[in-house]
Image (cartoon, rainbow, N blue to C red; front, side):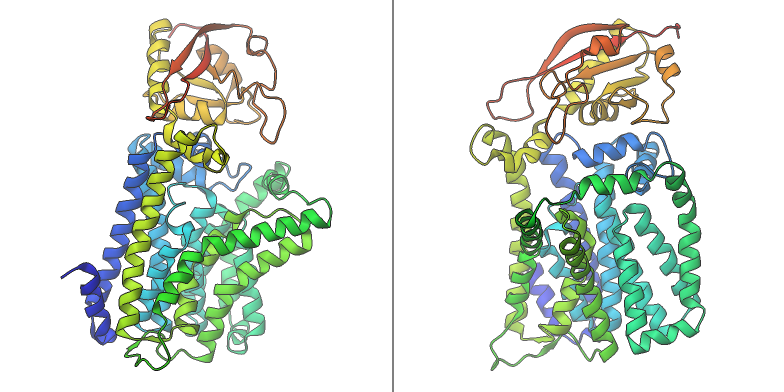
Length: 527
């Protein structure tokens, strides 16, 4: 019996009596974690650029950076526990997504049938955020488990009014904020729901909501103190990312782009739901929604739709360029919404189509990821290559080779472990990650971007300086190089420039070799 046929047989039974459905659910989680941990290990040779940033920040723990600190903390902790290992980074990403799926499952089990809960989670494989983008361990992904756990805890708190649920809600909301401030959208929606929904509003007469607020603010207070005493770096970063549009035409272009991107990101999920639909005359023998109450229906509708509606409204009112990935966690309850409002029951034929479409979707997205990273380097210099520039960079960049050559050369010249590496986020970060010495990164050559670095210690222990003669000298554009036309010899007068390192890209594509310049700032004291 195939997995699909076995799943169909289980779903066709009375879901309330079938313990096997839970086994299938955890089997799905295991499959997702295994496949999406393995794919980037096989088809890429470096870390995603956002993850590299987390690696650098994780070397110097602070209460915030230009982003809230949770990404840096968990990557730094992972690197400390298991060493700098790519598999650990990718596994951590998938475990966070798995926790998000589990929270959706737990909430759905309280509202719909076990069958419906299973379908609610499987449908999320049609959301690109939850598969193709998961190898990138960046703040938007880290929000997902906290977002879904918070929503689950709120439902339980409103239903049972237990102190533990209100307390956990405060913990999850604080965790979401420590990951990224988009968690404030969820808090805003929760407050609005409590104020407007009659049954939910009764909780204001009890201690629960105030316990949540107290716990959340208590946990966030160190971070809030830090950013207010350091000139609000996270707020300034948001202002840079969400720049204002210039004129009506650009405002419509920004809003239209955001809208189209969101529709594209959930298009496969919509197709999975369509696969469930039957003609009206077909007998629908498998119940998915069960009998959700009016409160349940309002809850699902609000938390599935309101966050993205609020975000879209803010984009429209402010006239800012909102980035597509800011809605990452907001689509977590797409499947549950579909079960409650679109396909409350289904025939065996519809369920069979859904499971077949799910298998095809899972395989299609995995294949697309492999193809994008394998073929992207071959598109260099051709029309449309810019669309896959990031895939080309991450799949073919010889990060491990570069770190190995630089480490060996440093040891031959200096005879000590590399203590510091100076350079761009992308290059220096990878050298730090893959070098067995794991030197601290002096990002862009200044302590301003790495405030935990003691420049006197850099001068005392020496540093390896590495730069890309093409990209790092660029003094214009959205992302100028860190040297911006400056002579590195003037920036580092004691540096001894070494012959360029020339390496082939990790691809079968016919690309000119990568040529990087580097130099040595010798230690002032022998070790």
